[in-house]
Image (cartoon, rainbow, N blue to C red; front, side, top):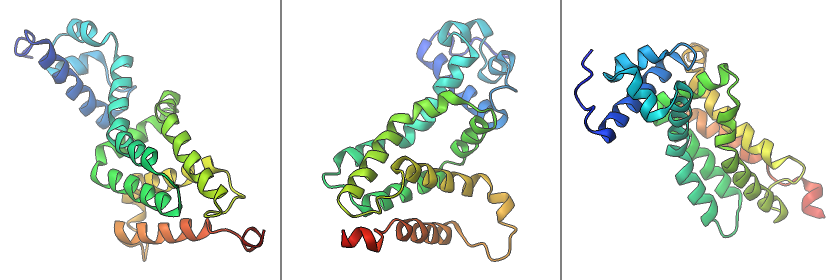
Length: 206
């Protein structure tokens, strides 16, 4: 193992360690990765990893934060910029999340590990994003644009889980008869979700 290259440059060393951590956590999850693995993959000593990040747990948290931030920053900006939340905002949010996962398979795998490990801190990292999304759904409900008899947080949860599981289980359901492409699934998923959220007749008459 070459532990000399980059160790004189703190920023470069941190970058190498983070890249190694991301690669290993995506491949093996948190529990199966050791500090020795991280040191070998990044080409630095374990003491340097401790110096820059403190612990394997701290690295895990940072890798998750970066993965979530890659999506959350753009989505938060879209939600905050919405002056009059409506059904189209929800449709765009679903499509944005779906396409993010589609183009970032490593993030899909990383999220799968957090779910398998019952990782609660991951849910805390994106809790504010979910809160903001649910608030926009609630505002659309109050405006009569979406049905009002469903929990806004459940709406967000359902579309997040639906999109995430599509990619996590792709190798499995791709063998099922009649299952279409990503684009075909998204089109049908949007039809079901958005039409299911249309105001009920009683609500329209109220």
